[in-house]
Image (tube, rainbow, N blue to C red; front, side):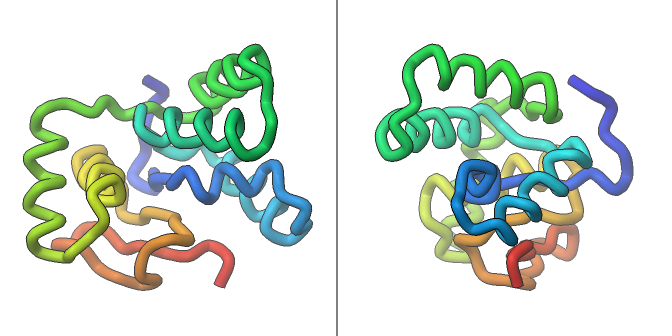
Length: 137
């Protein structure tokens, strides 16, 4: 894992997918965030790969190359049993979607202060430690 700093942030899969979008403004913002070495988890890798294969028409090799690039360009935080326990508590407390709760749990465990996501409530503060920010607002 690359060295995380006090300004580390977590990036949701929906932001990464804008790297391939025709919207120049959103694509440029995604490129800016990727250049700052975000934190992601294995779920983000899986979601990006799935969307790229099924909706964007990536070949298997293109998807594997994208995964290799993301592994090189991001800090990948591991998902473990504790992540799932935390996610269960987050669903109960904040009514997150199940898979969103795994992303939030990983962001909290990795010590990130910001989670960039387009799919969750903008400016929502979690446990006084993490703020969800829509990077396109």
